[in-house]
Each structure stands twice: as C-alpha cells, then as structure tokens.
Length: 133
Image 1 (cartoon, rainbow, N blue to C red):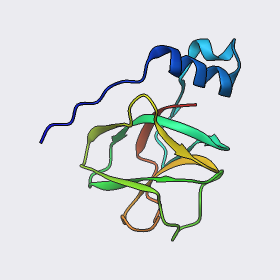
Image 2: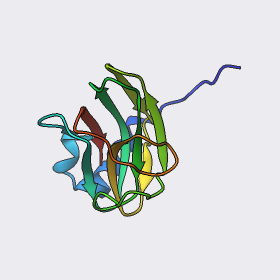
Image 3: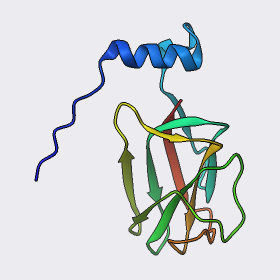
C-alpha cells in the first residue's frame, strides 16, 4: 500500500513558525542542533517544541537503540521513551516526521540505550543532528 503525503502549504508553515519564533526569527527555521563530539545524549530543546527529524551516527561496535524522551533534561535510567529506533553498528540513520513534525510537551532529549523499552544509557559513541522548533 502506498501513502501519498501532501506537504503543508508554505504560508501555513511560515505562519506557524512566526507564531513560535516571531516574525524575524521565523526566517531561518527550523532550528538545528548538532553534537560537537561523540556523545551518549543530547538535549535538543528544554521546553515544549516540535521535532521535525534527526540523524544519528552510531560508531559503536554493536547495534544500539536511539530513544527520544519528552523531558527538559536527560531522564534517569529506567525512564520510558516516547520513540525508539534501532541503529546498526557503524552506520547512520535518519528519521523525519514531515512538515508538521512531532510535538513534545516538556522538552526534546535524544540518547542511546542498550535496551529498547527503558533507558539504559550507553557510551559516548553517537553523533546527533536534529531539526526542531
């Protein structure tokens, strides 16, 4: 079965960005954040926001799970993620939620984990890049 996705009109997206960022700030949206070095987690945004997508590079010698948490800071081990994707060893993977993105109420935190259902933080062996508002 095929899915045909109709992108939101540019005017609607610009109006949304202006509401969130103000007229001047909306000109360079979405915002982007990237790792400065290999890391195990990254706070993409502390506070409510919308994640459009991310790419992760896993340099570990084993596959691991990449988790997203609706939180302002990195949650403790055992926390339940809102999204999980498995990333094979020494490979990159991208996730994209389209023009409207995925909403997070408290904040957007990405991390690696050795388990999929709850957070068990791994080593600093990932490079994250995310687009958000």
